[in-house]
Length: 224
Ligand code: CTP
Image (cartoon, rainbow, N blue to C red; front, side, top):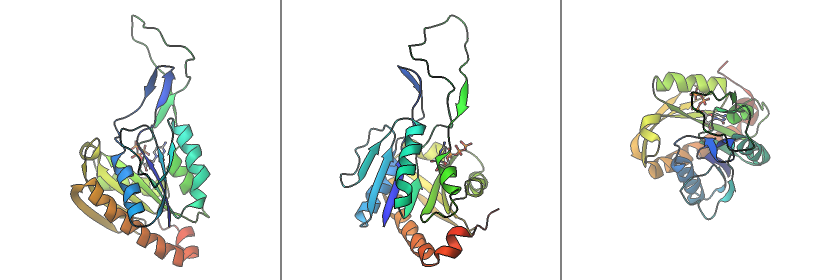
C-alpha cells in the first residue's frame, strides 16, 4: 500500500525572523513512516522542520507553513491508500506577515491571528475518497470525548488520541484509537517506535477491509 504521513510542527511567519510554532518533535510521525516502510509499504512523508532524519526509503517533502503542508498533502493524497495526518499544524497564523523585521515597542502590542486551513477536515470533506483517513488528537483533558468529537467533525475513519503532556517531545506515548464505528482500542504506554508498528498493522488491516467493501464503508458515515 501507499502511505502518506504528515509530521512535525508548522511555522507561521510573523516577519522575516520570527514565527509561531509549537513543540512537536515529529517523532511519532517519523516512527510511523519508518514502520510502514519496514512492513513493505511505500511512504510519502510530508514534514515540518524537525531534528529527526527522515527514513531513507521514504519520499520526503519538507514544508514550513500550514499552507505549504496543505498543498503538499492535496498533491499526493489521492494517489495514496492510507493518509495519516500526524502533524501538529498551527491553528492560527498572523493575519499579515510583515515584510521587514518588526521593531521593539515600549508597551504591549497585539498580533492579529487568522485561522489556518484544516488539512484533515479538507480531506474528510472529500466524500468519494479512496483512502483511509487517520487523524491524531493531542488533548490535555477529556481525551476520548474530545477525540470522538474531532472524528465526527473532521469525518475521518480513525482518530488516534493521546495526552498532549505525555507525547510531546517524548520517546514514549500512550494511545487511544477511536474507529468510526465507535470501537475504541488502547495501546498502553510504550516507545513510539513500538506503537508505530502496532498502528501500521491496524491501519493496513482496516484499509484492506475498507477497500474490500469500498462503496459501503468509504461513503457510508455513521457519525453525523
Ligand atoms: N489538523 C490539520 N490541519 C490543521 C489543524 C489540525 O490537518 N490546520 C489535523 C492534525 O494533523 C490532527 C488533527 O487535525 O490530525 C487534530 O489536530 P488537533 O491540533 O488535535 O486539533 P484541532 O482541530 O487543532 O483542535 P484543538 O487544537 O482545538 O484541539
